[in-house]
Length: 450
Ligand code: LLP
Image (cartoon, protein in one colour):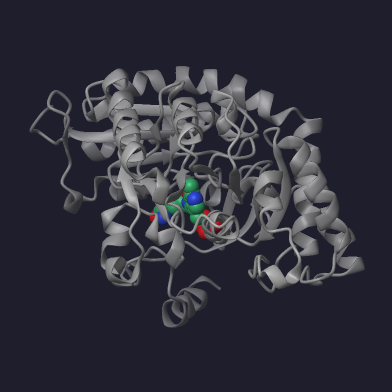
């Protein structure tokens, strides 16, 4: 029962991204089951999954076709390794991924979460130049406020001070250029200009020692859903190519239809050299990730053993058959149901639904691409003065939303809205109603600018 589970949870579990001192002072939410786009706690209360269980759910929960793919695979085998041997679903999934990915990507290297897919991307980019004898190319470029996961390499290319600062002595130091943030950089043109000019001057001086740049394409997620203006990614890709620096696209959050295209790179017609995917790959069912590379990258590792160009990297669960089977079923279902096209359509509805929220006195900016949205709350709309981090305005809004039956997590002062891709327009409307009410409940009475 609830009381017993709650006590054991507090006694034994250390939760991720959670200050446990705050957490144990509250009654925990304990999820028991899911159905469609709703989650149910052990007391039977229903909640919309307004953040897709941390940005990964595609078809909803407890989907018969996906459940079946897992049970069928389970009757064969749950796990066997990819180290030096193969299994059936990982082969079929790799073929499918290459067909869906931007043209030019030709090989799939599996792992089991976003951070490992990024870690692998970084190591491959580094070793690519080593294997080609260009040993001076050993550093990386990342973008201000980037988030690529929590392992040490991924943390090194992370640039959110709250998450990353403490580990600095432990990390390698990439070059950091600004991610365009039009709301706080004087509009789209100025923001894009700032990004491109700092990239270009960096490349002009340092390209000879830079292996790759890692980018969250089109939407920078964890920094608060910051959106790159159209064409910016393409310009970045062109500059990198001109200076012979690899492009790593971290599509962990944006991949598999989230932004209204199968991959966000497609908005700008960009083909990265290396692409990391995870989250939505299995429909949000099981932890499978992949790093996709061009044949050119792969070929730099393909050599006689004595040349010592092997990519010595792998995880115990790399290519897990259960995960690959459900990923394959997820991608088939996405195609059958035209999920990506549906997202593109529903994005227009969501834009309409979000419009009235722009008039709320403490909503500074609303950013949205596909079904990936962030609502930035500000203390003063005129001056764009942020709420002080200590006020935890985002946390308070999300607490009220939870009482009203919608789950999401804030990113600082930004309310995240990333519903499952199959959410209907009616469901979107109901979720936005709850969010609007929650924002109003928490921010009214804040007299400084009402
Ligand atoms: N890359 C990107 C662009 C991501 O957004 C994420 C996770 C990762 C990599 C890492 O993937 P993972 O290792 O988790 O599978 N910490 C924030 C939200 C992070 C969102 C998850 N993104 C929070 O407290 O809500």
